[in-house]
Length: 190
Image (tube, rainbow, N blue to C red):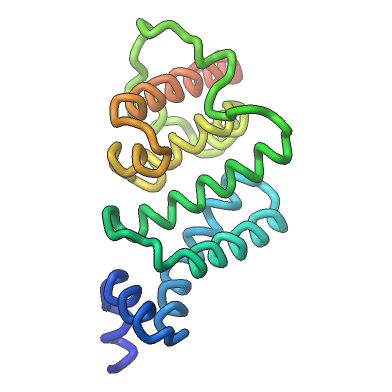
């Protein structure tokens, strides 16, 4: 099989073949497809290059060791994102020695808050958006990145975070509201 044919092969075919033959070339192809994405997510969440590099290595070790448990109920990319986000959240929790970072005092915002439209986030200048994302809780940042940067569907985010679709929709709504509040506080002249 030529290199071009292998590179077009579906993830699931590579996984099945790797599990059957244990040929490292199949796992290497999966690694090449996803290593940049995993490292990118790690650096965006962990902020420190050495932490992101270590996390990406640990994540791929987890993927390698648990590949036989991939149940094919979701896309492989969703499974990889799930492992990546959960691992990074665990690192942050350990680093900060806090409880659930997906909840904080702002989580108790009233349910009747005004909806923040996607355009409000998408039209923020990228340098300002980075500042805003760094100021909101990491759980909110993660969910916004999954939705708007990674372009994941609600059902995929729900699968990654082991929540219901409606819970994810509410988390996104609250995260957008927090981001807008931070933006308004930091850049009041806009």
